[in-house]
Length: 463
Image 1 (spheres, rainbow, N blue to C red):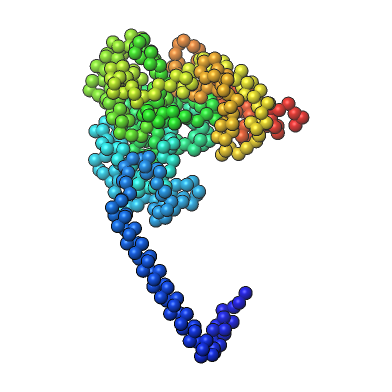
Image 2: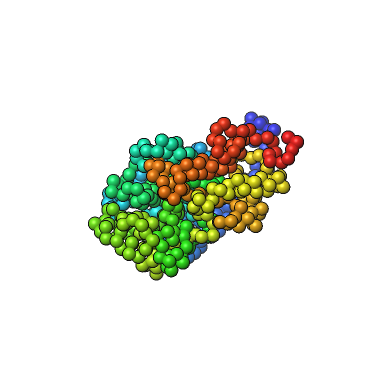
């Protein structure tokens, strides 16, 4: 390697006069060359500028268009989060005003409906571009329970385990979760309490495309299954239900509003406003109850409830709502526990049989990459079917009628049937989680202690 000092000595060596003259001539030739190239470059830049002026980049206004941008080229706004999460959790530029700076915008359910919500979200994402990537698949799960201790002696323990189940599912699939045990509007209690929480979550999470309400007495029992969001791309509300029960049978159980997925958009803001105003905040609350009961002959109680209200809107304003509501009937978006719980053992055996024949499914792996193994399992489940009679794990088991907190269960079944069914469901789901930590429940009625899993389980061995 030649040092700078030796290079300096080389240039300071006195050349002959003839050599010096030649070097000066070469220098001027090079200078002329640079001037020519510089002029050419300037001309090209002027041509490019005129072309850009007459052919501007098309402006875009949709959230999809923002998501398609390349935000990470703007380092001023979009340094990667130092924790490596791919989004910048510290970036919130004060120089740009958003809907959060509007004193007229309210989180409450009884305020006037939020206007131009799609534009407000779009502008927020524009100023927070690290969130734009992946926005269409971003989900926030919302759930909650009562603000006071449970009357049922084991109620609080059960609700804690139901919440743990939801946290486990969200951790595996990268979803945020919001839990509330306080009423956001004292008038909107019981089953109506979900709507104030959902609206507040929509405003608090403009980066999320979907808000997913899941009742406190519903739990995930297929921890690998992920919402098929692409299937719902043309819809704004996803709920478990059956059109013929709505429009032919006119039944108040034609859908279940205990689990629903709602798009974070203006259409949904309008729906929630209309829906909530059929509840206790409405001066016509009693009237709505009478109207629902006159339409749904199988409705047993006089009060307007959230489920009957949603079905009423679907029935009476079909043209307005039906095309944007996806009624899931082909799989257990939420499933009635009575028909599901007795099959847990058989389903578990079928999955173990599947894994004995597929070494890739038995392979130990980090919990963070669980989705990869869920995708791999799908090819072995093509013949399993869905819903009743299927040996596929039910996605969500819903303990409707059990009332784990109050204990005031439906008299159709004994309380012990509810509580033991919940323990089985919780342990059935927990086995899918704890397996990744090297343990399983020895049986579905034993919560603790757990049993270590041998290497290459459930192969027949030797281990």
